[in-house]
Image 1: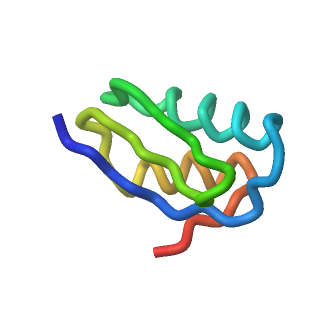
Image 2 (image 1 turned 45 degrees about the vertical axis):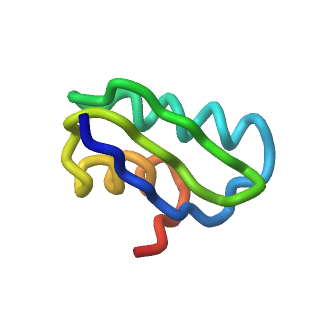
Image 3 (image 1 turned 90 degrees about the vertical axis):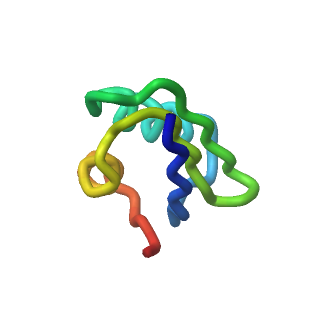
Length: 66
């Protein structure tokens, strides 16, 4: 199982966290997702393609820093 770390800007509250989690979980191949507001990052485990994860997060209104 692959682990992907994404830095995400503009997450500041639990609503943000829940929105990003829901967006990531909508991508096929995601086994688990951990969102850290404090560190501004999302850790995804599974076989989901990185570009699809980034697209889902950005479509939810957040910026992914490469």
